[in-house]
Length: 406
Image 1 (cartoon, rainbow, N blue to C red):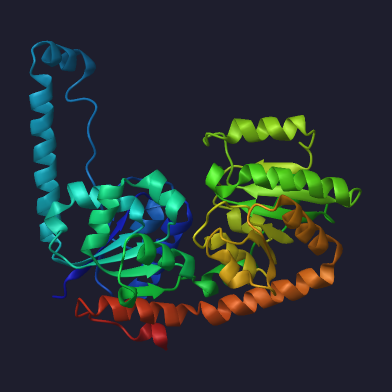
Image 2 (image 1 turned 135 degrees about the vertical axis):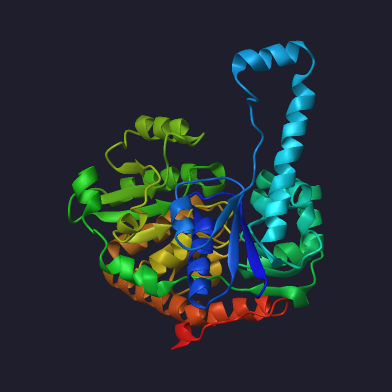
C-alpha cells in the first residue's frame, strides 16, 4: 500500500489559499493520489473538504475540564492545572497515534500560517520530507507567524512552491531558501470556474442591492483588512465617482462584513463621504463568483497580495484589472495589456486608470479578453497538476490513475 500525502491547512474558511487547496485536492483525487487532510481549525468549507478527502482536526485546548462549578473546586484545591495538562497530554498522544496509523510519507504544508502548529505540535512528523506551498509575503508572515516557527518550517522544507515570482523572491532573499528547490506557479481549475461563471447569476447585484441594470461596477474582493486596502478602495471610489458623475458607476466590495475589525471604520468613512448608495460592502458569501461575474473592472487595492485567486477569476471572466506595482504577484499577469499597473499607493494614477476603463468599453473588452488568454496560457490546469505530481513523486511512489489526462 502506498504511503499518503498529508496536507495541512490552518483552517477551512472560504479564503484564497484554502479554496486553492480544495481545488488541488479535487484534482489530485482524480489522479488517485492517496491523501489525508489535517485541519488546524474548522470553517465554512469544511464540509466541501470532507467530500473530497478524509480529515483529522488537530485537538485544541479545552477551556473546561468538567463543568464551571467542578472546575472551580479543582482550581481552589490546586489540582486544576495538573489535571488539565494530563488531559492535554493524553489527547496529544491519541492524536499522534492516529497520525502514525495513517502511514504518511510526505507532508504538504499549505500556507505558512501552519508554521507554529508544525513546529510545536507536529513533532512526530519532523522526520518526513516537506513541501511548502507559500501564498504569503512579508506582511502576512508577520501577522500569521512568529519568525522562529517560520524559520523552523523553512529549514525542514525540501521543496517550496510559490504562487508568484514576488513570493519566490521573498523566501530566497529573506530566508536564503535555495532557488533550485523553488517552483513558481499557482493552480486554478479554470474548467470548474468557467462552469460556475456560465451559470452565474449576473443579476444578483441588481436584485439584492438595487443597482441599475446599466451600472458600471468597479469591484474589489477579500476579507476586510488593512493589507487588502479597503480604505484605499473607498478613497479611489470617491475620486472616480466625482469625476464620472452622472454615469451610473458603483463600487462593490465582496467579503467585507461586521466580523472584520475595520468594518465599522469603513462604514463610517462611506457615510461621512455620503456615498452609501454608491459604495456597497457585501459580507463573505458562497455566491462570490456570481457577484464577481458582474464586475466591469477589478480594482485590486492591496498593499500586499501574493497572487489572489480573485485576479484569476476576474481574468477568466474577461474583466480587466487595476493594481499597484510592488504589491505582490498581480502585476506579473496584468503587465501592460490586461489592465493597468500603477505606481505603489498612487491613488491619483489608480483613479485615472479606473476612469479610463469606465469611459472606454472597447478597451475594457480588449484588456479583459487578453487577461483571460493569459490565464489559460500561463495557468493551464493539466500542466500545473503535472508539476505538483512531479514534485510529490520525488518523495513518494504514487499509484496514479491516468483518467484525468484522457
